[in-house]
Length: 390
Image (cartoon, rainbow, N blue to C red):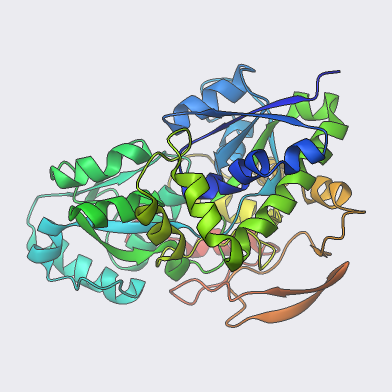
């Protein structure tokens, strides 16, 4: 049996776990020939895993759920046995919008930023704000919509949300082809470094300790390659721990800046890693695939008309994330792993030590900016509370 694992990724900071596993040799140490294949768009990643060109992928957190709910072009079962970090994206606005609306140049709390945006919409007449996101089935789109609606801005009536690959976002903003975008780093920092835009607010401020990408794995490959999958999870866990260590920051930014990976200036990579987007690759159980995260994404897909709510659909979304495989892979790997697979999202207002397998774990804060909480045992009530528009 081949020990080669082909993994697609996009040039983003949160691909660092995969890149480090390759560059540091942690994949090789687990007996894996890790082949990384850089892609240009999330649609390409989705389609290549569907038709079997790759075995796994650096994938948008809601994308495997969408695949299993048959919301994608190909009938494909995808599982997420691991998350690839917390946070890491931001909402960046054009200099034109910043000046017209009177936004500060500083990163702003979501409530304040939303109130200013609501006034800009009210003063803009019939013109819709054009906002770029990376894919329909992305945390970017769902969390952007959540923030807009909670701020009194209707994402569909007041805005035109368009799809753009991440590397194209800064140029689109510079040419005023979009008024704003929501994207993962380093592309916010690229826009700031060129003067094209200013970071308005961040994912971490909208929903603290929230997931951004997962390791998406073709389920058929996972069934046939259980040992390789476990080895892959172990290698990525070790790489995530290395990426999170401040002592490795210089080495990590040099690694990511290479032309074959992000291919941008090292100083911009450094800003992306240390800036307000707040990407966390390891701490706070950043690589654990919480099923409550999957269920929250499902509620937002229902909210915005992407799928009709059914009990089987909710269960399918929950089962897409596989904490059982994560625990099994790390059982004898000196790892600290959550003992629960779900939690109430938004309930932690500060860092809290919790019980875990293998030691003590600190979680949180994990609050939503509007103070609401999502209880995975009360999905029906939560859905009723989520208005479609503003």
